[in-house]
Image (cartoon, rainbow, N blue to C red):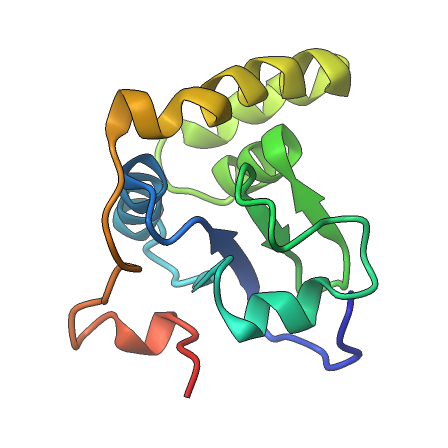
Length: 141
């Protein structure tokens, strides 16, 4: 990971102005009863710092990134499947799709990513969490 500092919980980096991405964050929050994930916008200085030195360009906002507490970094379909694996309910069953070749999974992911603003819209600013959820978001000072 770009910064050598250890993280305690997995961190999901998402496009903060994308309605689909904000909806996905809400979806995860609702199904993450153990509070295993924290969140930060890809547009944040935190994301730029954490992604420096990786192959992921923090200026390209067409992906979701999962920074895992073990130091590994996942993006696109791999990130989505690793996130689903930790959610409550039947969502971990989606992890079975990890057996599909990454190029195929990411091809499907990229179709949605390229069209997400057109299909789901965008906002003018990053999501601001409610006061009770603020502790789960990493906000730039």
